Amino acid sequence: MDIRHTLSMIILSANLILLVSLLTACGNSNSNSIEELVSPEPPGVTLSSGQLIDSAVAGINYISGDTQGVTDQQGYFEYEVIDGVPQKVIFTFNNIEIGSAIGKEIITPIDLVVDGNINQPQVVNRARFLMMLDSDGNPGNGISPSVTLLDNLSTFSWDPLDFSSDDFQFEPELINLIADINSVDDEPHSLPSSEVAQLHLTETLACQSSGIYAGSFEDGDHGNFVMLLQDKRIDPLVFGDDSVRHGVTSALIYSSDQNRLTGVLPQQGLSFDNNNSFITGQTNNGAVFSGNLINFSQIENGIWRNDVEGGSGTFTGEKVAAATDAIYRLSGGFGDNTPFDISDDTADNAGGITLDIFSDDSVSGLFITARGERFELNGTLQEETIIASSSNGLEISLTFDASGEHPLSDLVGLFGLSGFWGSWQTADQNGGIAGTSCMLNFE
Image 1: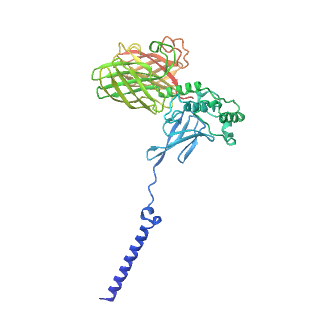
Image 2 (image 1 turned 60 degrees about the vertical axis):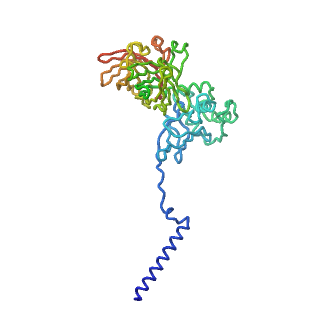
């Protein structure tokens, strides 16, 4: 054998032995493994915005992962979304933890409590605490601590509060906290009663939920439904007294299989809980529609059943033409003669109307029949009059009573509530409109 060939074989064998030794060493070392030398793909982190409301709550610290800040005047905050999954947001004021929730478009004191609802002390006490922080004592125009208070927060260190306490107002930790706040702020702060806080939160949630929800149902029967969810309503004929009900639902159900229009009488159908569950009540043919409102806009888990005529199924729907930046939201019904008397109505001349009024007095919304035909409306508010029209031939003229003090309030069935009434017409049909309104945002 040629000596040069022999040397080449020796060198090749040595290199192979060295390579095997290196690979074996790498395989036995956690710190130098081939897998660890390749950096893992970082998770996709994005930011979304949400709003903390009991009306809008400003000046509250929040943290979501590595993102933190303070809610602005409209209560807006940011939360992290990792690979499409919203992450938890923790809300605090100075060193007091108010609560946490998974990030979403709107978070309320109910969301800060596991399985929360409007009747729980831990929900109501959080609402009381937030209202106590307000600088002018009027939560209707937003909840906002004063600049003076915010500038002096670093001088205070407070003990945690027990929001679940039935005697929340007597807790020494809370009494000391309020005393500290009053020592630096010009306006006195006090804790509102449970009843006041519960009513305010109820009104806020009812206004956020209010509007027209439209969709379709299927399985044992097929057709369209238009649900009216009013923030509040007084109706002595239906309820038997003149008390205010909040979160009132009513509906028109049109069965395309049977070509039949059915009405659902108003009832206090919104449950103020984590799921925003609702029920429209029973139609005169026995059908009941129920579900949940996601982000106050989308119907989820919609189920209908009819224990009288038989049948059950599912339905889907969403709030129509609802602008989150509107100042006022108007929600009502329309009919051939009067919107709440469907005896002469058909699927083409009865349905729901929702309108939003903006800070520049412009108006937009939707008029939708029980059959599902839609008319997009645009117009203006001039003093107490709304004039609006659609490109497909609908015209409306309304009186808007924001204060509930109009002389005709009782006559049109509003009984001192903020609302509207008037008329609609197309080329070949006309009728009446009536409904209630609420202040969604403040200017």
